[in-house]
Length: 481
Image (cartoon, rainbow, N blue to C red; front, side, top):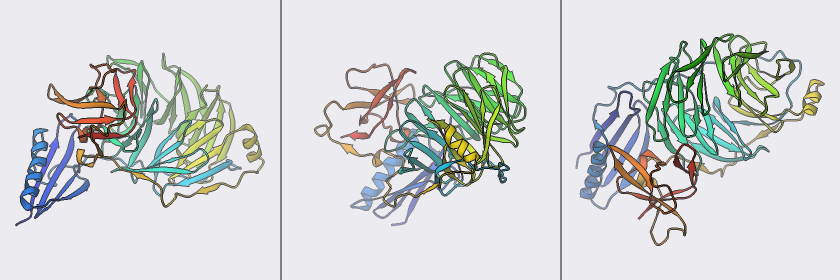
């Protein structure tokens, strides 16, 4: 029997979807290829006892996609999503001394994403790899995502990776899943998330806000372009671009203030009462969240690629385009400048007297930022940095893109006290609600879109309420059969 291929696409103007789905039947074999339009996508292969059963299975898959809005298309006619790879240069440091690097982990590809919490360190690179490490430098796990990682953001103890394919993946459990799908016409530069609300800044200087159900809320176009900064709290979204920083009300009701900065904003950080903008004109500026007033300026010797603070804002750190890292006091007095010993810091985070950097050579670097270590480094005494290696048997976690890829559990085998959720159709949208007792019935669950099927039930571990009025999963998801 001849090989049969059906190619479908779903591309919605402003609706977020820009995906293809291809099903090929070859005798008793069925292969499914899916992903972002213009990308190679992911491939799943299945075999069936007879050719008739293979065709029936393929027809079911195609029918499900058509009901979701997919339509027949011709490969290559629609353009791929616009993706901007950040072009950076890195010169040697002019600092006389090198920072006291404790350990260095080379991810193998250029990297921007970093998140550090009390439990572990996260780093994501352009190859789509996200690694977790202990604070001592031991590699713990690896997530393999379909496209390059733009940034890593945290919302309480949920970790999200924003990727070049327009998907934002939840990495809070062993199996990552796509939690948000960003419109194809948005060329993503940076992301931030607060109480489940995703804020996306883009190449054109636009800001797009999406809620926990992956539904568009509002958007604005700021005065500048190249928006590399977005930070959010309960009252506002702070958007940094080529013309400065603009604050918008979190409900989208309007602009709160705009402040021109000393150069285009290349990175942003926030504390409780202030936001920090690192710019191309060699400064970090601290702006009051309430008014946008410039409260302090921190002068560097080259364009600022990254910045961070200690939790109380007592110290301000910056990384420049010349492989140097700086520390200032709160008022702007420079305390020290040291070389990174391996490229410019594209992202950074401070925790417990350690400064974690992601550098232009794709490395995650841990610097001892204690006063004693810095003093010794200024005198030329630094520790021998440990070159961290990834274990060959390292567990690798990949996204579950379809219900067929999710583990199953029978009703009898379901753990005692497990929480059951159900997919339901509401107003043309597929929602997920908790059906177990003891939960608010009106709240929906942030759940993988790829495994939502009407009437399907799942057992989930670690279901937690969010202050935004919905539930999030932090644990395993298994289909109930």
